Length: 352
Image (cartoon, rainbow, N blue to C red; front, side):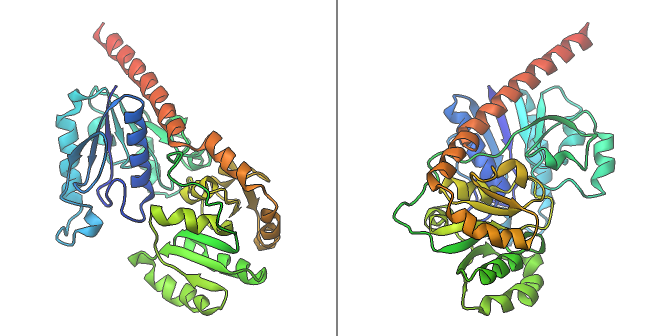
């Protein structure tokens, strides 16, 4: 198939550091190419792909201070894709609802993966208006706030099988927190769990500008505890050592997590996950196999010792069964083909 992948322009594909959506777009694009499909990636100019790159900005907008209106290159990208739509068998967007209006009015099959939270009230009228636009959820729980959307499948994220692997020479000796320091991620809970279990914790996370006040007022004072080590943002190459050295990854979230990429990154390294039972967590964590979905702090604290008893090889094995990029790519191909056949049938009926 000739497939267009249309990515956000905020980060490169793949991102240099943090950037969950762009990372998944990269894994999917590479997986589709490996399966023999012709893929064009519409993304920032500093993106890297084995497909065909269509650069829509000089570089990732987050790294380009010369761009003061990020909506301008995004609008131009949408128009460029629209003008080239006949070159493709399917257009796959990763821009939330932004393509709905323009691309629901043309004949090339489209699909949008919803990467973010859907429980925001302002989304309700959008999805009421565009009830027929096909979308993919990244967990079944993600769908709950918007039952009126035209969900055509739930496809869990996946990682390249050998991107992150267990480092068997690393002896687990600390708890890990990975990703982003923000109120909904509850790094404070992670530190409290570590202190309650007298276990060192290493925090590898970024602080967005929007969360600086939260970090300074709430988290930074907690970093002074002798059990806490703040590493900062890390890249893909650093994750295997970081995660393999952890007894467990703590994901004590306080929001409806749509998927939670850090959980399967830990599983890829054979590291169990202890996560609060919100959003996608019960779908991603196999209870007692890859970790524990907990209801409160008491359960989380108790789970630290329990996690030490989980066979790390079994954690990795379950990752290989459920969360590889090849599985994700094949799931999307199956969906692309179904949407293409359905769209062709619709056009045939309309022409009669």
